[in-house]
Image 1 (spheres, rainbow, N blue to C red):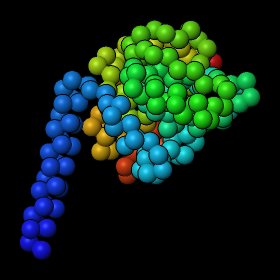
Image 2 (image 1 turned 30 degrees about the vertical axis):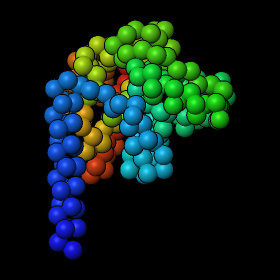
Image 3 (image 1 turned 90 degrees about the horizontal axis):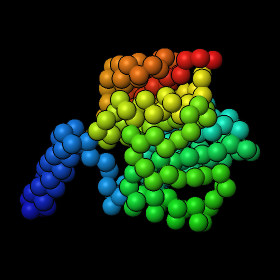
Image 4 (image 1 turned 180 degrees about the vertical axis):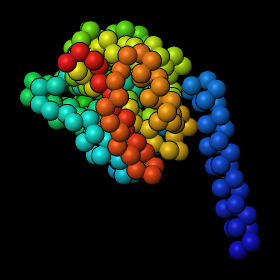
Length: 212
């Protein structure tokens, strides 16, 4: 019994060391979540822990929209956002890691709504046409990007006038960004604050591109 308690305590300590070690490293070097851990950010448990449906609801997606996710990973949100903009709408993912893209495309091979495209690029690369997106969103991704300002400048350029930028952050994520930080960064590149929805463990902040 005592040995079992020691083992449990050691595992708890190990998990805490790993968590805070990764958190420190992430804040220092802005490390993305490795594709090796894709299963940890996908599936039913991830849906429940990360509030997939509530996050999607806060995007206010409508049929015909062009929606862009920066850092979709294995597609937990992107593949659910895509049917919401049908018919005639498009869902675009910009993903840096080839491993994540491989997993996302494997899902599409089994269940493709027909309006999803994936771009292999960094958020700091200007890969989208200007002024065509209705919604651009990032979920627990902003803190992974070394040059966050350039990433949001690209989001602003991709959106049509009046288009929405939506940023979701979840407490406990190693890359967590505070509301104050996100609002100041978004304002610095020209976004107007729209609204915020929050619970004790997560929030979604929405911003609007001026001009509509």
